[in-house]
Amino acid sequence: EAGVAQSPRYKIIEKRQSVAFWCNPISGHATLYWYQQILGQGPKLLIQFQNNGVVDDSQLPKDRFSAERLKGVDSTLKIQPAKLEDSAVYLCASSNAGTGYEQYFGPGTRLTVT
Amino acid sequence: SQQGEEDPQALSIQEGENATMNCSYKTSINNLQWYRQNSGRGLVHLILIRSNEREKHSGRLRVTLDTSKKSSSLLITASRAADTASYFCVLGGGADGLTFGKGTHLIIQP
Image (cartoon, rainbow over all chains, first blue to last red; front, side, top):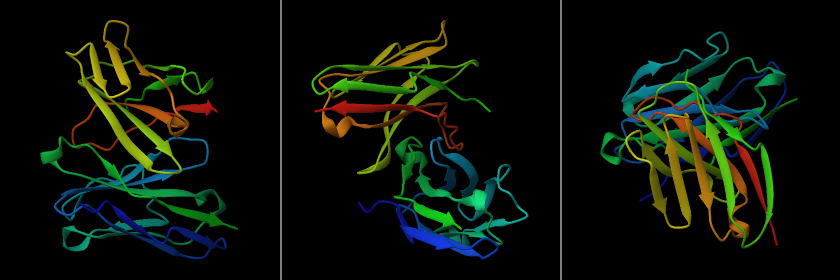
């Protein structure tokens, strides 16, 4: 079974530029999560989707971050414009009721904002 | 939101020794999970223990839960270099997003 796929793996941009990350969850997983992990800290939930609907985006900085999950499969997380403090690893995870909601994480995208 | 607090923040042991890390929390829970994160395999789920369980085993891992003390421990026996990682305890389960603490950073010395 293929795992959660993310791209790109690394991205370097200048502040005020925009960037987008892509995630393909495990086939059949209805729930998809985006987390932000700053160096030295644990991951922080940004947004949770159930199929193509948003369940929780309370910690998403909506003035600059946006996310979508069209057709309830792949998802894209966008930052526009980026700030220095957005430098972090962005992790995508998926889960399914059939697996007891265990979350499966992708390898992450490491973003550096200069 | 509910968050566990791992202790110690960092731990360094010799290969072959046992490693114990602890998690404390403040609220009532239904489940508690442990996750591991390293550069090789990323962030992976290790084990889930329910509030009505006191101990659970998975390979070289042993997790205990004491709901009266609001604490859990993760024991790794016969440690290996590949166990070098950060370990996180996460409260709850289900479909909700997870809340992670800072974790315990474990280093296994050869």
